Image 1 (cartoon, rainbow, N blue to C red):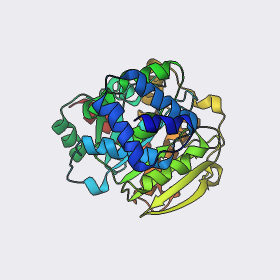
Image 2 (cartoon, one colour):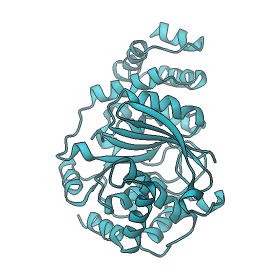
Image 3 (cartoon, rainbow, N blue to C red):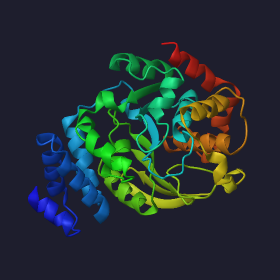
Image 4 (cartoon, rainbow, N blue to C red):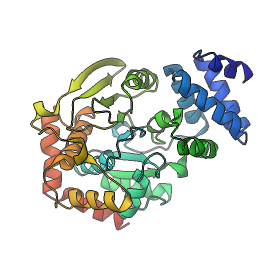
Length: 339
């Protein structure tokens, strides 16, 4: 542990074995030593997290927390950002996951309450009536029957509980940590398809390299040029496309897909009450156009495309819009909240 801290103080990257050993000591063996936890998290952030260090953290969490099996595990998908972009957007990816599920994709949505934002995905889902703290078997049943299950992180990650105090104290000082990057990679159902947004351009390649070692069939690691950890129509989005262990990069240009370029202010969310109103307006068909609607449609379309549900983004856009216009998403939410 001391050697690892020394290396971090000297801004040296830890290799996979060193990082895993340091994380095990700090967060498993000596989990009550919050000061050491904060020291490691701060030094990692100051140095810059490497793909080996991120891989080590995810591998440790996956090792100590059992996978949840689902009969359709090979077709499961999820979409979420790391948070931390400071853009105060509404819950784009959470709503988009509902749209994708209503469009036929099996979504195992992994989320938490607000840490760095004012309204987390768990906060929104709970307010929409989804039973986020339902027993695991009930949520798996919903996933099988309705194509959507929400897996509230605190129920499935005892490891995260051991870092919660340190993480919250650092978040209060606006210090991001490796846990921002870890969250999307430790979905307890291990979906084979995933859309992951990151909050800085330099992190996209690093997260993609870590993801390459984690067994995804296909994953998009994205960063929007407007500074978002989400797909938006404000600007192009850089995509690291990981498909069967091959990694390529390109840009998604929303104007080439028929979307009108949006202004950043049009994507602003707020507290739970405001974000809930935005979500209901889109889901219930009161908002059928505009920047918020477009961001949700583009994100849902990307999920449908990367998982093979459609052969192109254009096809995904058409399918996502159809699910919203025909009230399939509204019906799905009603079914989920009725259980």
